Image (cartoon, rainbow, N blue to C red; front, top):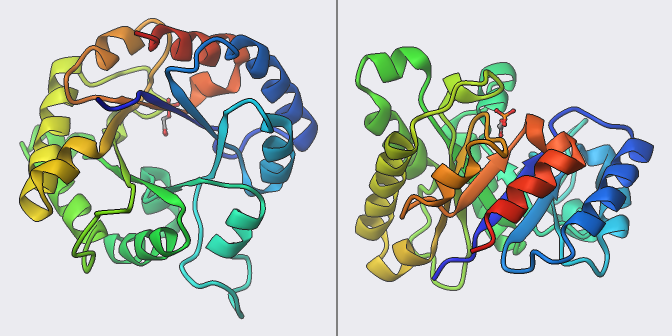
Length: 252
Ligand code: PGA
């Protein structure tokens, strides 16, 4: 039985003061939803504030990206050691906005995944097709390639936790979503890849999230799918009411 996981991806939003205020509001809304695991991924600048404000609540904290080296002359980058130091337990890797605007490649994602695992950060590996890829019938191929290449060189996931997020690029921030059945098809396909690459046991253990315009109005249908274990939530994670409601609706 996989515990549902709801991750808030705040993207480039909220000052430290706004972040603390959102967490305060969430704490009271999430106090009776312990069956669902929750992680908040604010910008780097709010990580410390969010980690402190979450203390004792059971809410996890994650980053939206990181570099793969521990330290050194990499201007503008943040290392896994720094994230651990601030209390992070998750890190989103390979988000489509990073692929689209910042040149993130599967090769880079794979270095970051290895580094995250080395530092006991749980990588949330994002995969997903663009609209033209979907229309060309390439969804499975693209997602397979992104997942396999992101896990390149990792022979075994025993003792390591990863999370996979299936986020169709055309569904992110657009108000359009994949149909729950289509999303479950891809999640099932990704789980089969994990079973073939690693083992049935590993595949059964890995949580696969859906992401792309998730809101209180549609979460129930997604979480009801057998292969979808939660959601990566962007826009709706910036409001305590909508994010709190999404989490509440995942309590079985
Ligand atoms: P959205 O973003 O919920 O605003 O569509 C999801 C994401 O990018 O992770």
